[in-house]
Length: 424
Image 1 (cartoon, helix red, strand yellow):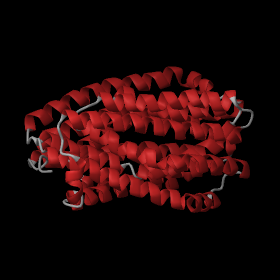
Image 2 (cartoon, one colour; image 1 turned 180 degrees about the vertical axis):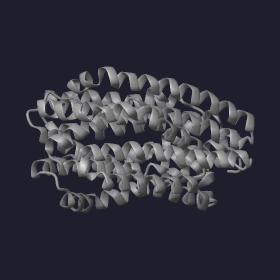
Image 3 (tube, helix red, strand yellow; image 1 turned 90 degrees about the horizontal axis):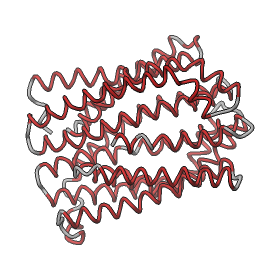
């Protein structure tokens, strides 16, 4: 899951690298703004993957094949419903958000262009959440790995072809991502069909009358994770839009550094995904021993990986920036704020690990409450230190990551000592 997840931010990184070598910074700023809006929208619906993973893993651990199949159908129905609503409203959403942005007209123009094209990937993108979550919940890490890798390889190849080969600039980068999402979705559906046949799950026709049954737990879990995701996206969106207020070069520099932060996040999410699957299975089987073994092994390897990432950004950070953009002003600004990124891996690793633990345990309320506290700390710290400019944004982000991990750790320790954590 680390290997597959680490390729996800490569989409944004390749977009940034290809667009960052064009002649003006507003192309890169536009892609950053448009892709942030898409990420916000889709990540807000990321509960589709999280809830699917936790519920699937618990059904798998309990060896309940009927419930295993129902979770997939419920998730699919919900994903396609959200996609339809988004496609109907995406133009209104774009007009509203860009009217509120303080970015330059050039950045807003190309951001709007990128968003309008990427919006059409919604059905595939949202269904991919369910496919990834269900496959991972069945303890199959290879299928999600190839699904994500195929998506990203197609995107990278089409990025180079459309932007550099055909000269389509921002439109080419957006179209490449759309086609890549549908490629990954097709492969994911094939993987689900194979798993369905191998596990001899009930025929879909026989389940249609039961899809609405027990959906209350699914909806409640999704509600809590949605509110948690809403807080998360509020902070990341604020990073981009507040950075835009500092100027085109700052928003472009932040786009480069946020691409690196996404590498950290998605790499660590690989451990979180593993935790979700293993913790969910252990809870379904009511095995405290299996849960303990999973926790210890994952914590150990997380420290090793994050120490390595810190070293990479400390030693080669400036060189990595140079690979992404050749615009001198953007390179200079990104280097100024690079130290915040160096500190990020070891501070943020805890929030990703505990996210995985609580998703696997389907404890959405605890995740929601701790995220709310962390979000309040983000905005409080930014406004207290706002005189520091863009440094205040990065200080707030570092503190936000730390508070997310600290809050969940306190809740986990309390439930572990009181022996209530295995109660899903």
